Length: 509
Image 1 (tube, rainbow, N blue to C red):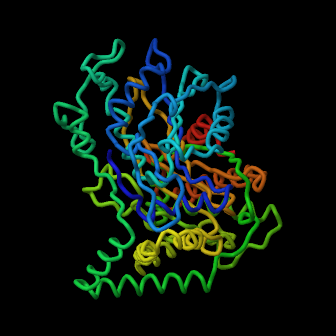
Image 2 (cartoon, rainbow, N blue to C red; image 1 turned 30 degrees about the vertical axis):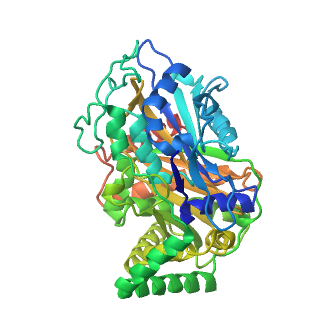
Image 3 (cartoon, rainbow, N blue to C red; image 1 turned 90 degrees about the horizontal axis):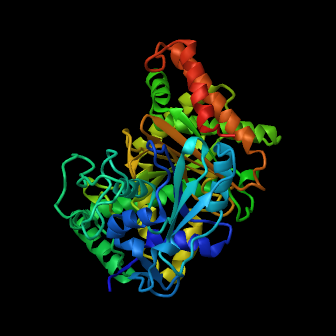
């Protein structure tokens, strides 16, 4: 039986759930596909075959936690589940007519409102039928202790194909009766891998092996003895972060009150070229554009509620991937964070954007991500029985008001069962007393914004999402003024087409 311990960071997401039933620490997404001519959604048997051939080559997906809760003197272990049954993790669902974005969002909201069962491997998937124009979707959710956002994109490359004819053979080597077999290809090079796809994939997978706290502390201490300057630098960065962020805590707003267990999930699509045009003309990065768009929504929401706009801004936690190239397909969490104040009190959108760019750059120069990583590393030295209190502190409302994650995806069309994937709707989890979160994911020329909120605490989510949409239009207009029109067309027709594209995918509202 294969067993590995969770890391302290992975266990954090279990502890957050155990501390408050309103915290749902699963990530996930909705992948929407166009049907190939003459074919509908895959059958349950076909999906089982796909998962057996690919996903289960990643051992964590057939393992469960033992014990299912944290605490005591050691972290839970991943152990092979002797009762593992794919049928317990894969279901079928149908949305109501007319099968548009509103109906899909309503179904997705219910799907993401349910926690994963700790007594089973921590993931679920559903084939969703009934979408307009014959489309169908694969909905999935996976506990954050198993994988982070970037890791989930890596896992998606295992499930999906770079071309429509890449549906693999079954375990016995017999091809599917309605799909064409093709060799599994390396994501980066496109070169066929080992003759046996399962063997080749298993060789590429690196499982994150957690270690007992005593061993981890010993290794950290030994590293400090060999590299004292680095150890002191990490400790100094950690202390500076804690002092700075705690003494000047995030402002309190109505978005940081107690929340419930239900979720509302909305999504929209914006062409990636539009966001690149904005950052090219106005400076900064695509991530700065994402932050400014979100800040516009927050400003409008607080204004509509008659709340004062904090002069220092609302503080966003922005996760950062720290994977090395060699860690492709490594499960577990490889993240640090930046804590950035979003200048919601600034009335002028362009000034708000430039202030966001300046603040982001300042944090990167100051090495704040190093400080966060050091805090996580030091917190990991605490025994499990004490670590839960530290975990809650790292995700407290005093430290940040909301999470905004931006995950770069693949910029070419991927396929499943020969069907092209057209949209990906990403989910970021909500910690206790955090009523709203935003996930942005780029894929195949578009950026998809997934907005999740507590429906009781944020019944006015439309105010937030409408303001986000308006800010994209205004930033694009400013980009044209600065001589950098959207790629391919600087005319008003381009703007009209972009608006139609967003509405077709489903506006954020």
